[in-house]
Length: 361
Image (cartoon, rainbow, N blue to C red; front, side):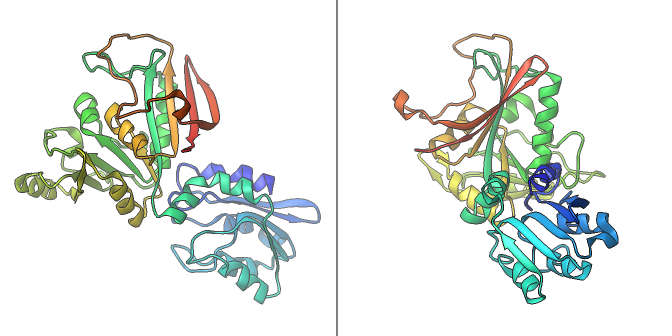
């Protein structure tokens, strides 16, 4: 099962909103097949392992990090493939929180006299798939706040220049984050400062949903993200604004193939919880927020983010007017500071990258 857990993250940049899954087939004490879920819509880990094992799968034991599915989705049910391959026993780590499939696969296998046991390294498997379990249990996507900053905590100069604070290796990892998620969100400030396109480079699999958060409805439509898409599949775009956005603007966005979502306002901010409810309902399990201090602060003030990825470059900018990564109301006492759990530090050339999860007390 540890080997299956090691294999599962190989699908990190291609499977969402499906979970990461690894599988290992063992016969007579030897591994005869390995597999992992490689991309959304592709064969599941169990099928990959069975194909790798061939005839050796008959009479083997299967170790898989998530219970085998028992329903027909984008692929046929894994439970049926396991039965047809002649697998003798199945050991799975975590139960699937998806009500559509939970328990159906193990039930099918037991009815066909295949021994099934669950719970082996379940906590490790759930931790590995925390974004998927969060989405299934709450109906909202797992939110990742990402930024690059200098050692003195600045994400841009006082004049707004930010390209490039981090080095090439940090930017490469940031592109991997874009390939991992289902949607990427940017606010008006970042739009004006960086004019981003928000597409992973290089692409891999399907393109993420690109979200433009423009509460006042004033972002210039000559920015690159608003350009009509021709020739290349760039994925869907969603313009998120308040009721005040003009009809003419919304009609022009529709002409360019951009959908619109009107959200209510609360104390001068868009209702981010309503946005997450909408995204979760349309299959977005992970959302990457590439915002500035105002947008990051809004997510943290509302306790709506689950993960932080911060790239820290060994340079100083200074300046009282140079922005930092987090604004908003903030906290008044050190005792109220939000703890980061399981922090992971990585050295990326001269930069450091901090990856950690948030705890709300």
